Image (cartoon, rainbow, N blue to C red; front, top):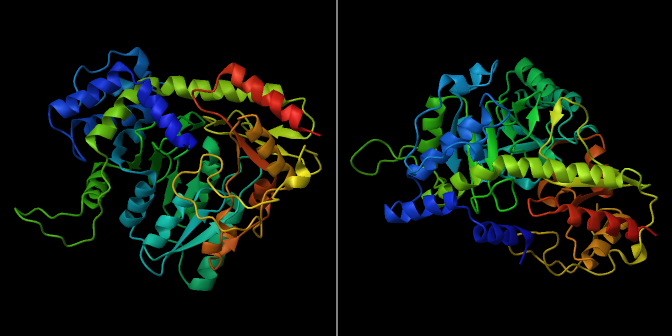
Length: 451
């Protein structure tokens, strides 16, 4: 069983009364469909969290609604001072974060022949939907501080695409890798200069903030994920933060098969079956009561890693660059100096992998090959194997999209940063079930693994 499923089962096994209440009421009222009161309520809960007056609405400390019927809009005094312009933001709950990316592209009119700038250093869910539309991803590399899209390289890419194609890219998709905020102000300035809308893929960034503002609320659209391994889970699901109520209605139209207003089924545009179910939304509403707790725990675990690894020569913990950045530390990551020797390093990549590694979900395709053209250094693979022997799950960083065979013909603007990080980086256990004792055990295992 992979780590995602373990976490889902543990979450379900330890469900709070709120979660069970919403789910039970959904069954009692026969709202077992991909819409309903829980969906509406979950959207409102998320809106309050993202743009509340405090650093995040403390759901666990307030009197939670006694019914799954959606509560009224938040009062004016809830909005964070100086963030009044975010009041117009609206949220649509969907079946997956990938669906949210796709619908954002649909709403922006991305079509075959268009180009969309994508961050290369991330998971494929932000670039695959571009291909769903028949458009071409244009990959941009990262900067060293946050590991996210390099603003300088972004502008170079825009200029070059205009020069080569005669038109500007249709959108920019920036990702908050492992929860770390990007240099979003610089990216927005460049996007505004060329009048290109920004989609924030904040799937890993629920609870992360830049200069106090929640990531996902800066651009035209913000994408969230509630997959089994995220800050909170609905077992599977996502959400799209929209600029206003009009756009929310447009997104909901596409998310529910694009049905026109007739007493029969009339379709004039292509739609999708992307709405979140009322049952999953019920889990989400209950999970909102522990969101702040999860965020604080992830940050606490990160602090333990940072302090515990500070004096370990050859190992570097990836931390917030400065006070502007407030990562949720969805996944804690380290890099190993390329000259660091790890036990068993000579056996790294000695045989092909047969099954899933590092919590990979779904069915993997066994190739029978042990190597690819670009792979983590042997000391990273050796460290992964040594930790695995100690029953500690770890995984390499995301392999950059511009190095993926499926995207070999796509334009890419690179500086070597993401490729180098992929070769030297490792993700460590970071979830809400990781205890202080676990972190100590993991740090000790890392130390023991060094030759």
